[in-house]
Length: 121
Length: 107
Image (cartoon, rainbow over all chains, first blue to last red; front, side, top):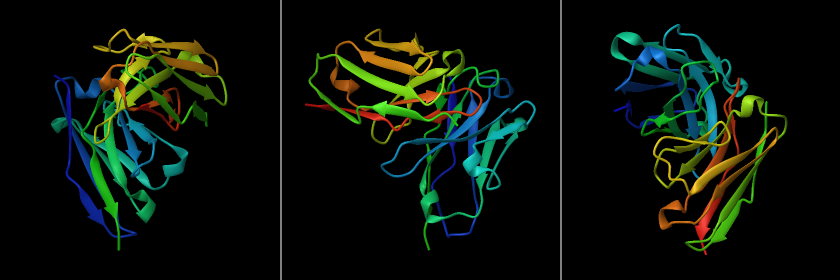
């Protein structure tokens, strides 16, 4: 069965960086895009970007350009999302979610359990 | 960026009633790349509908999606107790975006 298991909760100070991991199992990791979506407390869903685990190619939402970096390690079927220059309004639950086999051809059908990132001085 | 506007913000209904949720896009959604998700408190979103009208694996047939272009609808034919949740639409083309959500609450 498809599973996405994310790393644990983080507390960071403003200006720091955070790196969240997402370990995939139950399917061919390099065959499906991986997306990252966040949700601030009591708010809606916000798409951050996606990575093609096969090529390493990325596509980021304009809002996060220059602050987010998505990478992967195919040897351990794990995707990473690093967000830098953290601000208090980056406090949110960050989700990884599996996409389709092609660029933009399928929504996110399996989701990780979420990682709470708290930014506080 | 395609902006998705969901309405109403909150829908108060009783179990057994029909729910109709709307999602309007600021420009045409290509190839009907429109999805609907359900989210319950403390849980990750769950994919319900993709391609505007196709049910995802394991989704009951009381959930149906329709629409094209800029206007889309999610219909729950008869609300079950487990259907009270927040619903989001998403266009998942070149640069995905989500709507603000509709909360379906028990009346």
